[in-house]
Length: 328
Image (cartoon, rainbow, N blue to C red; front, side, top):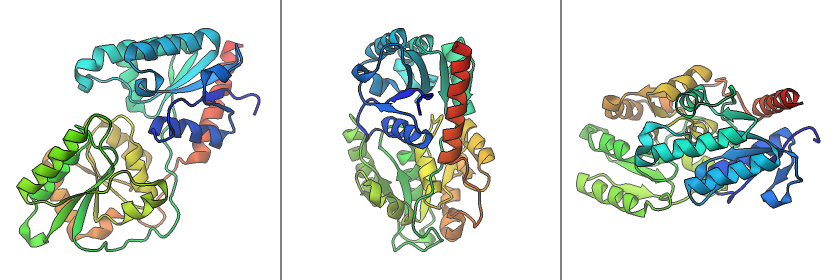
């Protein structure tokens, strides 16, 4: 559609942000460019931003955004927004995202929680748009099943500190012996630079007497089956502001245990009946309850998981039109 901006999808499709940029473009009918060199000067451009895809360093990412904004009418969707739990990189990440916002005519995020973080730390000059990450139901049978023994507690996604694997392991180790053997299922590979963290997780499991089974990266065609084969799905990452892995569980027909927090409550309100919240101190008891009642980890018939791709596409088209009208 000629009235929609060109989506610039940088990086490899294996990266979640790049893959999502391509999906939103496909759902909305927007044209795509994989290189900035392919853009016409002065054209309308949309960029899904995370500093890890935009540049080799935070400073390089900021420069890339400034250059793109100087040559084009730029709108952005911000991902992995800065928050104090980023540690030593927080101040530099804030400066990077401020540069991105200064270069853009409009910005969007995937949750109200993210918008609050951006407003608090990055001081944008224009209001932000919230377009929640969609749930895209996976094909095949999603009825409650009893996975093969041993029982398992599964965490889906890359392994890195704060993702929740350590907390899930500790919860399994604390389970009553009467529940029988339970393994930790790591559905994913180590994130770049975090192979040692994965090795330490396996060693820690061995010390605690908990088997840790690592699948490595799950291929796209195998995701649904892998998520449905876990007894208890857990989403326990600590500084989440939008979660594709949580939505993947729901898309597979599961009702995961999700660590309580601002974003978790926002999503529980958006999609009632799709998650079960737990506190840090209550994860082991929540896992035990789910093992005793496995049906509680599956979506009940008729649960509404919207918004989906159609709603997200329409929200983007409507927002892009509004930004263009203001600029005209």
